[in-house]
Image (cartoon, rainbow, N blue to C red; front, top):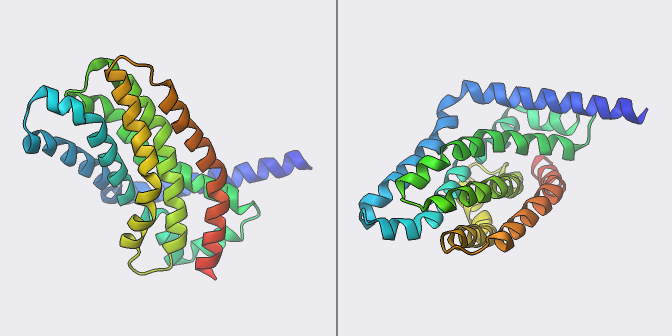
Length: 230
């Protein structure tokens, strides 16, 4: 009985993931905007601070991470917004699976759509900002571990503001202070790699943030959605 229930839950989750990916494929402008924003911001920094390789290499970790953070927030509002407007969100809360599982599926889709493209172009971003080669893998690893935190924390903020007509500014105010520690440890890990120091400490903390956020976020999102919907 338990096995059958687990299979049915995974079937519903797969349907949710397929549906969200199909909807996103029909809204390609919303899908491409965060990536284009990221490329534009990173490309403008060499023009603003000068092409000096030393300066660019020193600021590269912070620039890439701040750009990735801001680009991720561009796509956050659509996480639950469209479902809230057309009533699909209420149906999701009534599905024969736990709400936490459905929320995790939504977070996974957001990560796939926003973080995976960033991970793919990370070498290009590092090259544009003249990041030393020995730090490229650490930068990629910080993004791999840190971007799920952005999606999970963003889902909590969206759940609390989804019923507001213009919740974008409030969403930014809620999320940015919470994500500052992640930004600090991510840049510290890359800077340690540049200096030839082991980045294991900051990477371990980022990994801990990821585990905690992915574990607790579905429960927090569930509570936020019930407040917003009701």
